[in-house]
Image 1: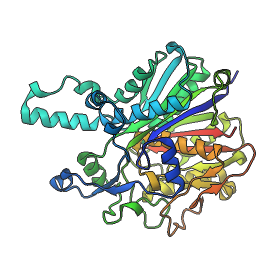
Image 2: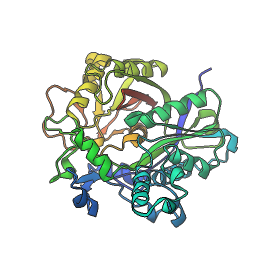
Image 3: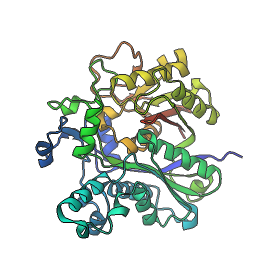
Image 4: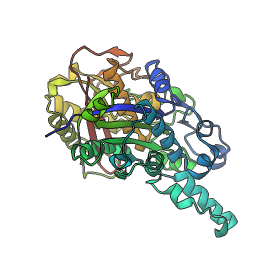
Amino acid sequence: MTKKIVITGIGATTPLGGNAPDTWTALLAGESGATPLEHGWVAETQIPVTFAAQAKVHSSTVLERFEVKRLDPSSQFALIAGREAWADAGSPDVEPDRVAVDWATGIGGVWTLLDAWDTLRERGPRRVLPMTVPMLMPNGPGAAVGMDLHARAGITTVVSACASSTEALVNAYNRLQAGLADVVIAGGSEAAIHPLPIAAFAAMHALSTRNDAPAIASRPYDVSRDGFVLGEGAAALVVETEAHAKARGAHIYAELVGGAVNSDAYHITAPDPEGSAAARAMISTVERAGAQLSDVAHINAHATSTPVGDIAEYKALRRVFGDLLDGIPVSATKASTGHLLGGAGALEAFFTVKALSERTAPPTINLVDQDPAIPLDVVTKPRALPAGDLLALSNSFGFGGHNAVVAFRSV
């Protein structure tokens, strides 16, 4: 028998705010989290892109000193978001053996890895810290969250590029359906605003180069879009069975009604230009939700602001919805937040859940001249969603041909 799975807690630390409420408020206000990079390494390394969407609140103002010292920034962000989500869910009193973590990252502890390499070269092996491996390993952020919650029903980490944390949500859904846990904290984090990843993404022509205007650089669907803005931060959602949530009197934001994961097997970085596998992921998600395509009332698109990616996703959407697509409001929130890579899916799931719970689709900023090849109903100002039973999708697609989609229903 299929169980109802619900969202009861949300946490985040993002370029728009140090917590979930501040992030949501800034998103609705049409703010941008992209700012110039004011670090000495910008001039030292001569990186061609000199801005990013940096976390609004520094971890050192939130965490204990020993936590900052012993955790990579990707784990620091995870811990902040995880704690907020857990508190928002009412700090549920659950047996540790029934609490699990499904986390995600795209890169992991890149700062720790590269700092340790510098230490090794400049000061020798004896000065490499013994905590280096736990700090740099990709499962470090999820482990930090899980140990903080004493989660003993399993801590898993998904590493599937920009689809990672949406896939983690699908895993959480499946875990709960299988009865392997009562409560799961699912999310993702990333802390890759470092000169090497910036240089590498720039070498691929993946990043926007609008160094003189960071706030308007991320512009999904605009004819002048020229790449994504690298972001950092984390988002977490507390996911549990409806029966468990109601038994403890929890507030329910929305129902997680399904998800799907598949792959293009087309190219290591470029999406399938026809979007066939991405389309199948959306169709499978709607089917798993027991819904019809006509039930979808809102879509949070992956929409990174790259010339190729935005069109590929549009083709996938059109393949799925046909003429129905013209009546579905689409939000592309990376215009405000930048691209959190492995944390993006969880962040946009948070936005999708809030869109349903507050009946408000968030805006897509910086859309000045919409690409005629992408005739979508793009939400450019906060838009009221109708009353009644609503279904919304959140899409995530990543390097390696990873596709992940989740569906939420209003309550």
